[in-house]
Amino acid sequence: MEPLTILTNIIQPEYLKYYKDWIHIASEKEARGLQLIGAIYKHKGRKLFRQYSDRQSQSKTSNSSITRANRSIRIRVILLQSILNSFKKAEEMHRKNQTSTTYGTEFGYLQKLLKPQNNVFKFKKCSELEFAQPLNDLAKLFLDNWIEMNDELEFQELVLNCLRALFSRFKAQLVPKTEMKQATLQLFIRVKYEYKPDWKLSNPIRVDKAGTDINAYKTNYNAIFKQRLKQEQIKQKIAELDGTDFAKALTIHKSFKIT
Image 1: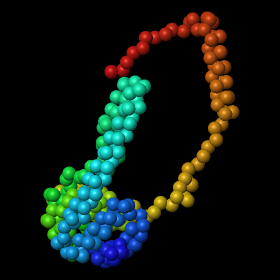
Image 2: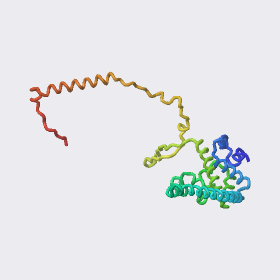
Image 3: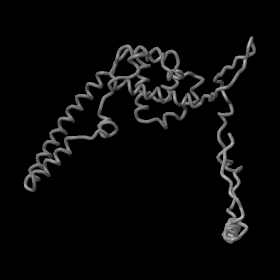
Image 4: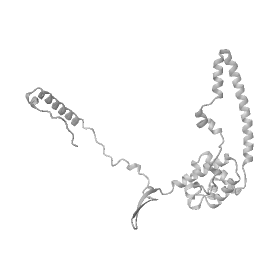
């Protein structure tokens, strides 16, 4: 099924204009999630996708066993070659191949191999979530039926990624809201703060006019030099007056504070 037909089936008609070019910028997981949603819509949410996952898991296990055998052979060859040089180097290389860092497990290549353990579908249905707003009623109903069948988390994550991407496009087209102050006259004045649509925030920023009101000033080095010269002359005059009778006749009063 083509992506555009899937979108026309699941998205409300008034919001369909927002998703004309969505498939061109969607990621691989989001595109796969859209195809999965199309299959759920086709079968009305009454079909599980475990059979394909079982085949895939079997192929993964066979591939993993082959890769493990290859790794073990490589490690043995490395060990045999390194024993001739030194046993410590072989031990260090084996340790580096077997162990992994915390960063690698959390954010690296190992994170892609890990399967999800839980998601939001365990606690709420699709119709109860916020990112189901652009979907029509039939799509929500079929997705709720599919969630109740408790399919594998791998497929649920694909659907979640797609729904979040669709909702982000929907939310980006809405008019932003700002907090506005509203006073009501009753027995006494009450002040309420409400979020209302602000059409000024929806206007695009004119990049070509940015910075036109900023005036640039050049540094006046001549004035700075004159100011420094004047300060030096004042210091010289004060130094000349320090040894005179006039400076000795001056009385210095104690400092005081006004309380």
